[in-house]
Image 1 (cartoon, rainbow, N blue to C red):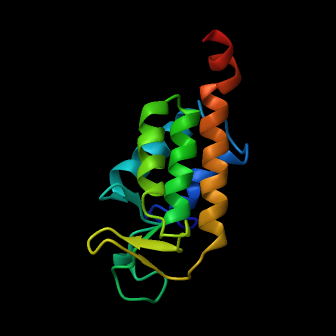
Image 2 (image 1 turned 60 degrees about the vertical axis):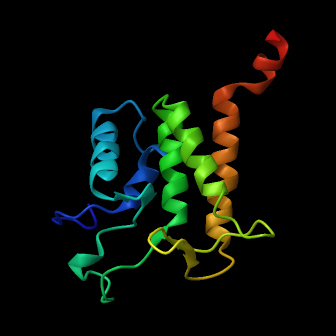
Length: 146
């Protein structure tokens, strides 16, 4: 939840298994992931939280935070959902501009990047997800088997 006693989700909960607070196989982690996929994923992107609550003092309707979508990629990898993770990762890569940069947010309704640009946190998410996908696919073992 966003805060103690709140009933609203926050995508930062995707960090729970990524930092080792709970294992990805924990039922609470699986339930949290399912809730985030159900309530915070819109048009294939993860919103940080529902903006209708007014919790941040801003008007509703900000874009999806790209780093949160990369965190979803990482969680899908941890759950063994490699194909879904790869599809989302490839989709996120397609958002980069002509020199490969990402912003802080993305608005899928109008198809444009929003917020701080370029955004280092989005790029850190990209690199982490690339490493996690690569490790999960065991490229050295795959090449050795060929």
